[in-house]
Length: 89
Image (cartoon, rainbow, N blue to C red):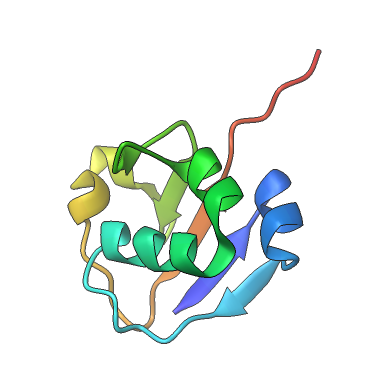
């Protein structure tokens, strides 16, 4: 599975993308594993009280909020893109 990070998530992970072993069954499982790897700052950008926060999470170009949210299933050949909220003016 290919993971791609944008904006401040790149700063947190120190990566623009990475390959991930697809043992996760759902987007929620993946995000919890990534919080374990990248810590509290990653969690603040993506999850809040175990629910998807403001970050945009796409699986193969489809917003998970328009699918099954954190229960969206994942497959080994999926591409997951994570874009945190962006501020500015």
